[in-house]
Length: 481
Image (cartoon, rainbow, N blue to C red):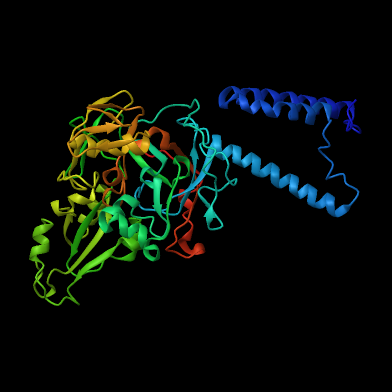
């Protein structure tokens, strides 16, 4: 006989409770069928809570001491909320904030959105022992334990990653992080400063830590290249397998805008939804020292003309979409516009960092995106392109001996077959985006989900009650095309 019967309930209340219990048991069975049979460990507790009551579930709330009842009720509510939200965040939806301008105007800094993990199927947590509702840090310390760790496994989802999807993923180059300088990424820091300085200069770079896949920082970009495709950019135009792709409607490039000396008005900038931080006045005839702009204009291939006593007037540097370019060209005081260009001197700043390709931000590739089952010959070029995939993402020991022999897990190898699919990601704000051009491919086990719903948008450049809340962007579904 049970010790804590469901006493005091009318027959109707008892029936309702049993119906609820039956529904919860069916839902648990369905969830276990999808997420794993380990969840059936909860079944005896559900049966007892709704039907048998051998466990004193209401002990704290029915305690004779009023303070115990109060604290017990509060504790039960907190545990219930934390467990429920943790399950929702892990398997269904997760809150996410946009920290950078890489996808403007599609997504803005200060947008808060829910990521749908069902879009591609949620991953089973790879670091299961962690503080609830925390990602990689909490109270200034690591929020998870490195072990035990689980292998990558993705549950059945509603679809797969497709071209032009907005995708949230764990930052691939975030496997190692200099905590005081997380941006640019660790590998770029090593290329710029040298690995020894990054590790030894704690004051500048902070502690260098390693993070497992599911505890790396979240990024959101647009998937432009799918597994097995060849991606290339020529003068900022994207080509896939040699075919030019349609650009996203909100794609931006950095432009130089010359006026006759008339400033761009705040009203016009607000109309175009250009952030104050993105507008730079790089030449002002009123404060110019008369220096020769010709070398700079020639390097950028800008056909700007001097305006007599006003010199070159005012020259701004700011990001613009194609529609914004048309709006500015219609302004009578705008004398010229020209897109920002990169030079071959900057080629060493793009992926792969340690191999001379001659590629730049604007002219990149062609580069073959790995897919599961694809076999490539191991040459100096393919090693440069795919060494991180082989070593960091697929977990093999990779070594090249002085005589040129390549060893994978200690064995000589001339070819390599990929175990995972990979994706190539770009930001819509092409000149202001740290994306696959700088840190390479996104492995399938890094994919988190798809932005689904924008519930809040805050403009930090405006007072909260005077334009700080972007009411027109809130409470809407995210299309992203």
